[in-house]
Image (cartoon, rainbow, N blue to C red):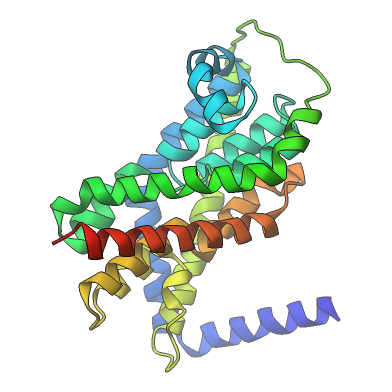
Length: 305
């Protein structure tokens, strides 16, 4: 039954794409340009460098520098510190990829990886500042409060999620301890580059696919769900609606915190080989999005004039 439903759904989507070739072409073009002009130059270098840091074990020394503060704040192990920094600074789906790499390499246990996934796979500060605040909202004065809200929300939620994961994190550690020696050769370099291009290609495929869905669905009468498909298309769509600014701002921050279904698909493509679960991640993202909405409302009504 499940297979039949999947085949029927894919067949219907294929027919719709054939019936509406212009919308399909427009969506694919927008997704391809977004991937080529923005995603590749901003994300690919970080993916390759992150691969090199993990494969060469340089991540041990980076984590050692960051550990004294981050370990106490988030109640995590030594190597998780690197994943937290990347997850907050490098954008989707880098946090998920680094967590999956650390789990696969045996640096952290799967349960700790699941906890990390709940709060450190987020939108990058560069995207927030340039695309959301300056390009979409056109309000430079909102740079600092927007960054603050979108950073505080997952940090606060990590305290909530920790109550569920804490015992499992403490009781279960990797079955082997990673070596502390640095090791680097050109085979590692080649592997990291190829892995980087494989990852960025997956990301591009999902962006193009969801951009097509966005283009096909934008003329539907009931299209209020549209922004949740892909945030790079969804945020400009929200700004064009005839809504008061405080509602637009709250929706945009909530959507940014959630990430959209495109980033969920990207995240799943990063973690599925490690058997990290995607459903708890979706629920935790929804909770974080609600907390973000509340903080945005409080800021608009009590601080912003």
